[in-house]
Image (cartoon, rainbow, N blue to C red; front, side, top):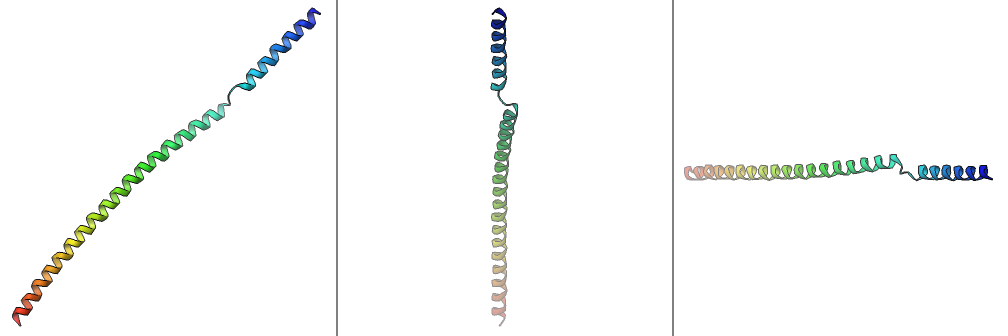
Length: 90
């Protein structure tokens, strides 16, 4: 009976150890969560860079547009002066 009691206690301890081991969190899951978090941070950073790039491109387009409008205005003035000179000479 004593031997049966010791075997029962030993079995209970072994079952408790197995249950404890099985209840441990999956180490791969923690790594996956860390990788997902890192990926989310990288995507956020990439989005910020894309927004900055878009602003720079928009700024360049507006500057180019303004420069081209100024050039067209100067050409119009020059053509107007030349036409006036031609008209005065006629």
